[in-house]
Amino acid sequence: MRATKAYINLDNLRENIACVKSFIKEDVKMCIAVKADGYGHGAARTAIAAIQAGASVLAVASVQEGIELREAGIVAPILTLSLPLKEEIPSIIVHSITPLVFDEEFIEQVNEVAESMHRRVPVYLKIDTGMGRVGCRPEKAGELAEKISTSNGLYLEGCITHFAVSDSVAPENMEYTAFQVANFNKAIAQIKEKGIDPGICSASSSGGIFLHPEAHFDMVRPGIVVYGYYPDPALKEVLALKRGESVVLKPVMEVVTHVVAIKHFYKGESISYGRTWVAEEDCDVAVLPIGYADGLVRKLSPGLTVTIDGKQYPVVGRICMDQCMVCLGSKHNVKRWDKVTVFGYEEGCKTADDLAAAAGTISYEILCGINKRVPRVFIDNEKNY
Ligand SMILES: *Cc1c(COP(=O)(O)O)cnc(C)c1O
Image (cartoon, rainbow, N blue to C red):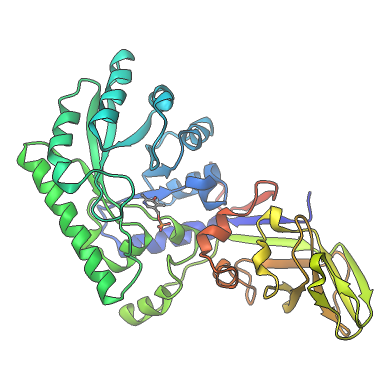
């Protein structure tokens, strides 16, 4: 087993889903986003644990991701949130993956393939209420819903929209989300006016779940919160104020490595590419077998500290592709082979939010950036499948 690994704590994941549940009404469904290999946590195991915890639908980005879940034996409905190529339509249907549609051309193409396979397949109508990504204009929703429900090969399973700023309580952002909700409601009303059942309506991702109960509709789509992080770290305080108690989310991923060597450096000697770090005094340095190819982005140096036996030590010199170095100072108790926590859920260690802040990004990118070559080790005290 490699020194560098990612522990994936599925007990924490189930607790995070229980937290989501405490924010929604009992009859609201949960569609868990497991795209990008479950935000880097391993899509299949994450999906199975999510279903155990009450999720009824899964969301992926690519068709391939959906197929991987099917091959893992998952039978729950799977939505593809991104747009496939025309050539992928047959495999969408073969694997019972539910596509999003929002224009005449694609509706016709999916219908044609479905008809040729003698199938009637569910689709979600994606409505762009202000995200500016995929989706039809709200005023086109009625017409497109009609096109879907009069096609022999399709039926309208539901309607979906996505928010751009639902994780922010800034007044202009609250207002913008309200505008998006109003657009969505108008589109749904238009579909109903045509005598068509809009099916399962869904708008909220993690931000909307916490801040916009009026936008939960029939199904919420939590992603990052399931993995133990707020969509914006500032939400932690916001929610504590709103609720009068803090909402406890538990990081699911813990990235660890081990000290594979300790070397002594004399004052004035430099470390790593570019010689950006020079020892100001004699010190010991630990070599860690983790680098940017594992997802430890180069921008984290200088600035990143790692945890060894409860103490923080700075990464010094540039992070390399497969390795990095950590200054232990002159007095320390670190030994070769000691465990090093890069980030995770362990008391006192860094979180993906800390790394994200240091690298100028968001926890999402840190988590799904942990490369495939880092083995995932699952912790699951409810191994009941
Ligand atoms: C990724 C995604 C989600 C989940 O978003 P989080 O912010 O991680 O909760 C929900 N809906 C859509 C359409 C998405 O692309």
